[in-house]
Structure formats: structure tokens, C-alpha cells
Length: 120
Image (cartoon, helix red, strand yellow):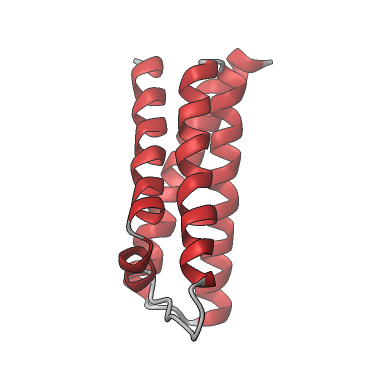
């Protein structure tokens, strides 16, 4: 059961990243990010919101090691922390921020809790 949920979490990571990687303009719009007079923002979306997550998800599945899944959980905990700090300081659209942050938090808690004892 743990192994199956780990792979599902990694596949979700790849799926989330695929949007940023393959459809950066759509992803930027969904995240309320506006383009400027440069396409550098699309490059950033493909890199940090896309490729980073696609490759991380693939690597975690390939490594198939509990510590790799823990590290993916730590990545999601950082994302959730940033999201919740933003809720407190930046006043983003609350429902969207809480949904995204909630998904990140659930993935973080699962990946760390389910794999930490196996990794140490």
C-alpha cells in the first residue's frame, strides 16, 4: 500500500510539473502570473514549475528508495510553507491558495510519515 501511494504521489508530481513544462502560459494564467515584455517568465515556468517537478518525480520513481520519497515530501513541505506564509502576508485568492497549499501539505505529510522510518 505504501509503495503504491508513493508512486501515485510521484506521478502526481510529474503531472503537476507537466503542465508547467508543456503549457507554461496556461500554468502562469492559472497561477495568476502575468507576462511582461519578455518571454523569460515562460522559461521560468518551464524550469521551476515544470521541468524541476517532472524530473524529480521521475527520479524518485527510478531510485525507488524511501529516502527519495522523504526528500520529495520535504520539497512539498517547503512549497506548503511558502504557500501558507503567502496566505498570511500576501493576501492571495484564499480558496486557490488553500487548495494548492492543502495538496502540498497532504503530499508532504504522507511522503515523510510513510517513508521516514524505512529510510533511517
